[in-house]
Length: 95
Image 1 (cartoon, rainbow, N blue to C red):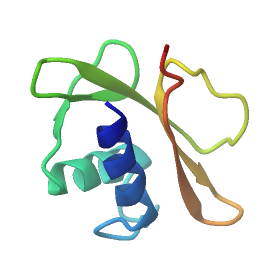
Image 2 (cartoon, rainbow, N blue to C red):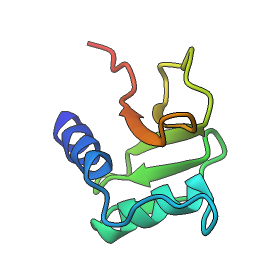
Image 3 (spheres, rainbow, N blue to C red):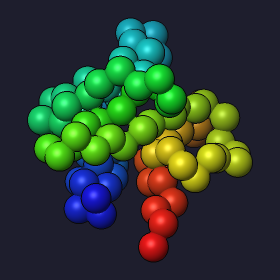
Image 4 (spheres, rainbow, N blue to C red):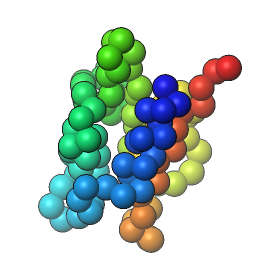
């Protein structure tokens, strides 16, 4: 899982396309970026969407445009509208 998190962090530090709020939603953009790099993005009852691993394990994502307190059970993609920056915050993994 840590290798996957590293790849995702690199992806959002240098996304394949820039986020443009006039042309797409943050969720649509994030899902596009992940799919572009070969990740399997699936529907999730908890979270905004999930990335499914080869063994069927899922990494759940939430999105926000309000930097602040984040639930550590999820991976977060946070856009700061003031600075126009995107930040990936990995989940807090047990052990």
